[in-house]
Image (cartoon, rainbow, N blue to C red):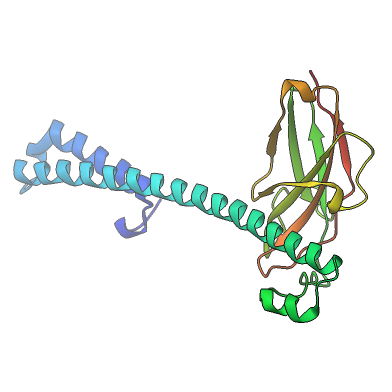
Length: 218
């Protein structure tokens, strides 16, 4: 039990205040010097704290969602810029013109201790694949490695497994496992091939996971 009011959590403080309010309402005369004005102030304070705590929880959830949206948008923008840079370079654009683009010359290499994600695909729902990822070196831990922004998920629909990401399309940067991939009815029966790698907060990337292939069930 906490030894000071200041050490209570927000929810514990509200619970404690509600208990005090019930006790005072029932037995005010026993608490010498405590007035109804004081209990009225207590009621207002409980309502104020409850509203503020609810708003705080909602704001935290919204901030978390907006962060995930931002990371997804960043990953898409990064990939478009990389594709432009790589296509231009492969087409023979001069180094001077490449420099004029103002983009870094290539991907940052992953740190020496970078891990590789492991991926499992659940096909139990029709037209849905639920992708569960984890660190290949820590199978019992669903948390992504320290310093990791999330898991880049790439997919190729149909045909043989991809040789590399150039055969795939970028699906998402997933900060929290699992990820739900949904498909149209016309894609039923095709095979989805997934490749996953860690995206680090410093901009580096890990090696690729093993390709995970799964049929889109009807």
